[in-house]
Structures are given as C-alpha cells and as structure tokens.
Amino acid sequence: MEGKLRPEYTREKTLNILSKATDILTLPHVINEILDVTSEKNSSASDLTDIIESDPALTMRILSVANSPYYGFVKKISTISHAVVVLGFQEIQNIALSMSVVQLFDRKGSEFTEKLWRHCFAVGVTTRMMANCLNCRMDGKYFVGGLLHDVGKIFLSQYLNERFREMISFMERNDNIRTYHVLEEEYFGISHSEVGGRLLDSWMFPQEICDAVAFHHNPTGSQNDPVFAACVHIADILCTVKGITPLKDYYFLTIQRSILPILKGLKENLSTDDMINLIPQIDLEIDRQSNFVSVFKR
Image (cartoon, rainbow, N blue to C red; front, side, top):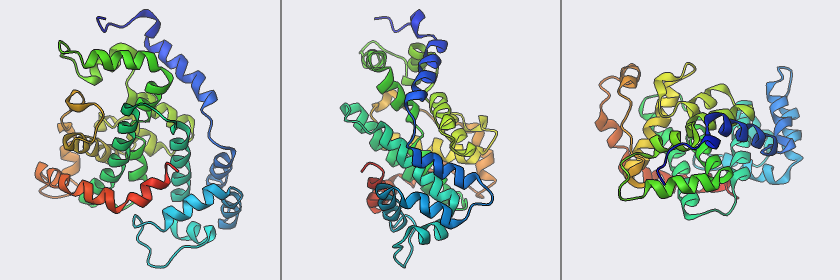
C-alpha cells in the first residue's frame, strides 16, 4: 500500500459522506428545544427549566456537573432552576450540547478509540488550565472546546473506518516517515479539524467553539477567537507530550510560533516554561475533575 490518495477518497467524496452522515447524526429533540429557548431573547429561566426537566437523564447529568468541583459551588445545587440561574443559559447550552455529542459517538470501539476519548477529556481539562494560565475569564467553553477538538477524528474513525484503519496501519509501518496529519490529508483529502468544525456547526454550536475546533492546529487562522483556539492547540500538544494520545510520536506537533505574540499580550513575560510547568499538574487536575468528565460518558 503506497498511502496515496485514491480517486474515490477525494476531498469531495469525504465531504459528501460527511453531509449524508449529518442527516443521521442528529442530536436529541430536547437539545433542539434547548437551542430554541437559549437563542430566544424573551425566554425565561423557567422556560429552559421546563424543557430540561422533561428529560430525567439530562436533568441528572446537568445536576451532577453543576455540583462537581469544576464549578466549586459551596452550596449544593439540587434543582435545575437553581442550576440555570447560577450557570446561565449559555453554560447550560454548552453542557447539554457536548454531552449529546459524546453520547452520539459513545459506542464500544477499538483500543484506539478508547485512547482517543481519554485524550479528548484530558485536552478539555488542560484547555481550561491553559486559559487560567493566560488569565482568561473562566468560561465553560474552554472545557467543551478541548473535549470536542478531535470529534472530526472520531467521525473519520467510525464513519470511514476501513480507510482510517488502513491509514493507521500505513502510519505504523517501519518505512513510513510521514506524520499523522500529512497522511490524513492524503487519505481523506481533508483534516479532522475541518471535519470537526463542520460537524459542530451543523449542530448549531456557538461559533467560537466551532472555530476553536476547526483551527486548533492553526489558531492564528481563527477570525473569531484565536486565543481560545490557541488554548486548545497548546493543551493538545501538552497532553501529547505527556503521552495521553493514541498516536504516539506520529502525532507530535510543535506550538505555532505566530500565536505567541497574541498570548504574550494577555500575560506579560509568558514563556514556554509556563506551559511546560502545566504538564505535571495535568494528572492531578484530571483526577480532581474525574466526576465532572465521567458524567459526559454515562
């Protein structure tokens, strides 16, 4: 196998499969109702509460998240109405959307798929750590963007499984000198980051999250929020350096240098040491947030 692009796997072919899949990969009806309410200016907290409480499973998951160390509320949140008030419409929307996406792809997979999900959760946690390091205002979008940054890769591995396995086999050959990212473009004619951005856009995620996913390997390309994309970008690299990745050293990329001036505008004297110093903290933070991340795969 030469690893060269076959005619039936052009970019157009992959996009066609993606467009057909989005008709199948639909989020639960309750999520559409939540999107309608959160986008309506005249909606009230009780409107959103009523919709969430109509789905007992979603209710329990949102309450579990609201009471996790991630938010650090001293007083227990026992009702959805209270959760809506303290978290806000946008945060509730992001939680519900991301939970639904994880459930959508949460099928028993290969060892690779399981390691990929572990990587995604780790990047979600580390993205938030990176945002905190840069003194960004804490927002749930950072965890969500990191959590879903590789959803395009998950899509390719599940919906173009044969071709994906073929690519991974070629990548692991002793005579292969190409990285995962180069091979991905050759085998599918498109990057997993673009696939992920398109998927989230089709599910009506906030544009800033779509952009962070679409540009997590090229944060300066984001017109919406390059700092957010950079937080995901750096978190992805830190987790990979730490070994939390299904792709070993075939995946390794360096930090995009052009993003550094933007980041230094947020934190004076920012250096690579600030980022490297986060690595030993990643396991501790994952353990601290274990209850929070486990809710997403129930």
